[in-house]
Length: 103
Image (cartoon, rainbow, N blue to C red; front, side):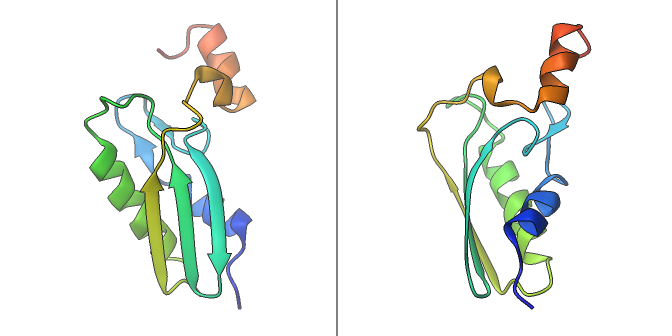
C-alpha cells in the first residue's frame, strides 16, 4: 500500500524543534512532500538560516518518514524560499503565541 501525504505529515509531527518545543509541521517548516512509489521527498525550512539544529531536524524527519510502512527511502531537503515567518504556523500555535503561551 502506498504511503499518503497525510501519513507523512502525521509522521513528521513527531519531529520537535527543541528550541521552540513544537513539531515542525505545526510550526510551518514543512513546505512540500513528493511521493513516488516507495520514495518520499520532503522540502522543509528552518526558522533561521543560522539555526544550529538543522542537521538534527533533517535526520529526525528522514527517520520519521522512513519508519512508515511502504516507504523505502526518504530524502529531506532544506530550502530557504519562501523564507519562514510566524505567519506559516498553524492557527493553534498562532493563538498560543498571541496569548503569550510560547516565545
